[in-house]
Length: 529
Image 1 (cartoon, rainbow, N blue to C red):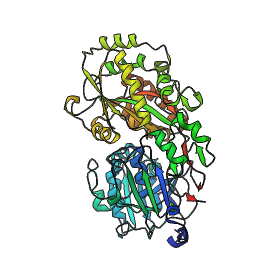
Image 2: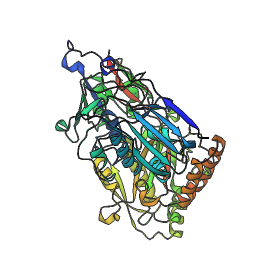
Image 3: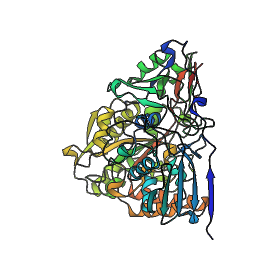
Image 4: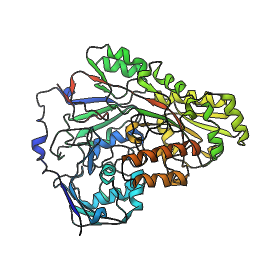
C-alpha cells in the first residue's frame, strides 16, 4: 500500500493586509534605512559565490520555496505546501497563488524547477539531491514534481537553506544561466527590488520597496514567515574602515552596522542611542583553505605537515582579543554547538605547537620551496587580521609565502580561478562561515571531497564523500554522531582545510529601530519607532 503524507500551509494573506500603511507624513529620511554591510556586494548573483554580503543581498531581492525560522525549522515560503508519496520517492510541490517577479511576471512552477536545477549544481545538499533524482516535471503553473531513486530526508531543510547556497527562485529565463556564470539581470519576487542604476561600486547599493510583493501569513522569524518592507528605500553604505563605521552609527548618519569590530564594541556599547547585540548565536568558523590542485598543497602529506604550526588561539586573539567568552579554540571540523562536534583527534590542534616541527615535516613531505600565493583582502577587517597571522606563521615554518593583497571583490574573483598560481590562480585563502552553515556533513561546504565540483580549493577525498553518504542514510541521531566522529578522524588525515577557531560577533543599530530578528543579520521586518 502506498503511504501518503500531506503537508499544507494556510492560505496567504492578501498583500494589502500585510504591508504597513505608507508613512506619508514622515520626512523622506525617516522612510530610508541606511545599513552598513560587512563588505561590498561585488558579486550580485548568489549562485556564483558564498560571500555573505551577496547572500544577504539575495534575501532582499529573491524568495525561497521554504524559509527557516529562528529554531532552524523549515516553513513554507513561496510554496503553499507539498505532498510526499511512494515512501519518499515522489514529492509534489504547490506554489502560493499571487507572487510576481519585479518585472510583473507571475512566479510559476517552471521558474521554481529551473531555479532548483541551477542550485543543485552549486549547493552541497543540492548535489546529493541531484544524484538521487530520477526526474522533475512541471504539472501546471503552480505545481511541479520530483521523482527520486532513493529517499532524501533533508529535502525541506535543503530547500529552506538560508545560506551557502539558498535556493532562490528566479525567472526561468535567468535560472537557465549556467551556475558558473552570473545572471544578466537582478529580478526577484522578494520585498525589495534592486536599483542597479544607483549602484556605486565600493560605496553604495540601493533597494526600493516592491509594492506588489505578496508576503505570506504568520510572524516573521529569520527567513520564514512574512518578509515585510517597512521602508520605502534601503541604502547599503560601504564603509570598510571600522572606526568610520562606528562614528557614523553613533552620529546617526547610518542606522545599522552589520558586524561591530571587536575592539570598538565597548565604545559603541556606551552610546545611549545604540543597541549592541549578538544576532547570529551560531558564531563564525574561521578556516584556512589550501588549493588542492597545485603544489605545494596538492598532497595530504604536505597539508598535514602544517598542523604543528596551527595555533588557534593566536588567530582568535588577533581578531577578538583576550576575552575568551567571544571565541573558542580546540575546534575541529564542526562548530562547538553542533551535535557532530567531538574530541576525535582534537590533539592535532591542541597538542604542543612547534614551527620547527612543521618545517621538518614539510621537508620530509618533499616541499621544494614552491611559492605560496596567499589571497589577502585588506578591506575586510577579520580576514585581513587572520591573513597577517597566517602569512607570518607559514613563513616561520619555512614556506615561501607571497601575499596577494587586494580588495574583497578581487579576492572573490581570483579564488574562483583554477589556474596555476603564477597564471592568476592561488594557493591559500581565509574562509569564514557561520556555524549554522556547517552544523552537519550534509551542509558543510568545506568538508566536501568531490574534486572540481567542491568549494574553492577543490579537494578530492573518496573517503570523506563515502562517509557523507552514510550520514545521509543514518537511521538516527546516535548513528549520525558516530559518523561525525569518523568524519573528523578522516578530516585530520585528508586536510581539506585548517581550522583556526570559532568566534562570535555582535551587530549594532540605532535604538529607534525595532523588530530585529535572531538568527541572521538581515535588514528586513525592522521598522523605525
